[in-house]
Length: 281
Length: 319
Image (cartoon, rainbow over all chains, first blue to last red):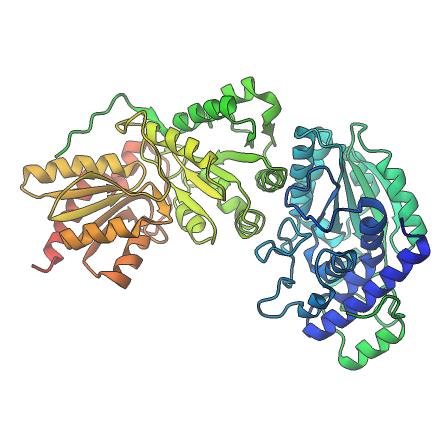
């Protein structure tokens, strides 16, 4: 099991990968990707620890993860490659013609680690519920994790899913909201204020836990704590507080960096702030 | 012509329901999901006998489609059940991304398709569904013609790996295909051999086309009648062979002309074997309230409309 320091090294390298990938593609979504790098690193390297050598679509007898806000896939692709699902150099193919690393995650190209397409928002929580029900039916005690954006919660389907999961006691599911308060048109509080997410989730019948998504020890502590709360008749929600663009000063907390790639000059500046810990791809 | 006998009119949705009961018994991976229409979808017996494999989602079709996609990841074979209107337009993006693009083994089962659901009117009469579904890559689109065939189709799609849109209807219609038929996805069925004209029909219009064939025969016109239960993938070989023999084609369906079976047939023929085509279909209007019979007449989907279309296409046929 990697130490928090080792996890930090991985997530710093993931951030470097993200900057280099979206710069190389001259398109993509760096802001959210930088924000969730710590969470995805900890989830894969310290919590789920899936078998990368034998990726199976059905993920029987292991924890599985779904990314609902597909646009932050650069961070996910980097974590998958760093974990061993596919060769590191493939990270350089993001968004290129013929690449398995599509602009948003896809199963058509059979990239190991991906179980469903995402990108059009609001669908991942429902998919995760389906996968969680299948695990229960199969007598598989492992968990299903999913990550959704906070702006994504404006899609009504999420609230269908939230209502359903509590009513049907989907207690082998841990949903995580990337609560960075930013979306394309500006701060979520300006675009469409959503009030208290905690109050809403609790009213829908979920267990709700807060987590600092840019603090590796806190991610470890909370994920382990919430894991121990599964199997008790209620679905679990983590409100993960993050900063869009975390780790790169000029991107941090700036909604403008949702879906804009850094120029070469900006990329150099950003990479100067992120130490190459494991070797670039 | 070959004689087809109505063994007693039944609704196609009951064929679906009966097949689901069989699948409940025979296939432990089959899951039924329903969005608050269990009696209408004829799933009451399945829900009663296999409660652990019946998922009531409430009136939340988007959630239902994506839950089904998730279930496939655990190796399940989910059948989603609601009306055609709520099975397609309402959830198009969910089907597009989580089912078709992701190539998930979801069976989208749609009842009350077309105008023959009747009195509920245009809000519930989906007559664009075949077009929406056939445009999606990876999607198989099936529209059986009677109770027996709907039952056979439901059983068949359970053993087929991949996304399927299975369309059926509300009213009781003649049940004339064999009760022990083997349903082959993508295989056109030649119901009557003829030489003057080819009538290609799907769903409820297959029986109407057989009736038209009988009338035409009395007038000395020999029609080849083909039941296309699988709109996609289309049995191109069968269509081309018949068009090659007769030299003109009439299509018949309870659907918009835009995007329907006729549109698929015309595309094929214009590319590979151009012959005159006439289409019995709905002409770019919404449905409305009425009895199924009244609506079929109003929208030009009756036996007589097939006969007229045959006359029209014969007048255009090169001799």
